Length: 402
Image (cartoon, rainbow, N blue to C red; front, side):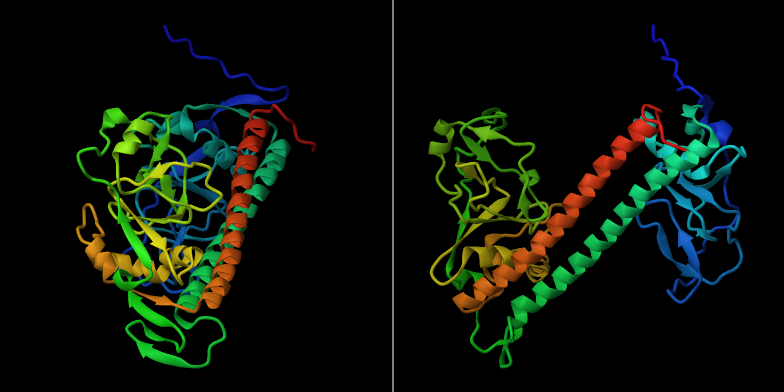
């Protein structure tokens, strides 16, 4: 027999249901496809998901001015706090507002976000599923202080998201220029890749100073029963390469004996790994930071091994550049399961600067990568901080000073 655990309220708090705190309504009027979005217009058109502001309209009909409000998506449980006039994109969105004078809507929004996990197993989510959920509610002045603290962290996360977005745009623009115009050049020549510096060369990957190495797909290719959660040789899968870096989670290993039966496809230091099936064009670099000594690629990957006048670091940054990502997609085949065959990859042309300029380009790319990583790590820190604050403040385990 299941016994429901009774929610305990800290001293001075009360137990209420979400439905005691909120009224909700479905808007009669929402945006129609004939309306034209333009940045010059005044009224934002909103959705509850990450994109939030879809565009702007000047259409007066249907503008919701009874603010503040929470907009809530019945199908995803995404929600946003809104304190400016707006229009709604979809009839699936509900508009929520305070029912009681002694409830702070921003605080209630934080409560809603904190209890999303309670209904995560439902196939569809409706505001009615929140109505009867019990929550501990402090006096309104304490609600406002808690909401202020949590929304301050939210604002910092939003600022960091914008910095990450702008840094990525800057990085993409600079790398596009670096791999086509180089560093401080004034004289250019016309090539298959367009105008590039005079002292650069352009070659197909097939004729470039590098080796393309496929994995061993013969009779000794590992079966499911050959894998274990630990062992001698890490056998890569596509989950191990994300955002152009190795991600060592969901790992699978093979034994030394199995490894020795396989021929091609074992990594050497400074190899570049490129995914060629499913998610085409993800790249990773097997440099000294990777602690695993024995690694093999699976059948949906290929190794690029630089030689002669081609720097391995330059090759890595080139292969993960937006310039090359676009070319992979241009020659990939299949839609349900995209593939990048070696023969197609070999036909792609790449620029090769002099070795000293390759190093310059790599140093600039590394600086940009560090900036992106720092921002991502700061956002991760803020996200963990927010989660901890929600657990402490919304439960009353830690009380705020009023």
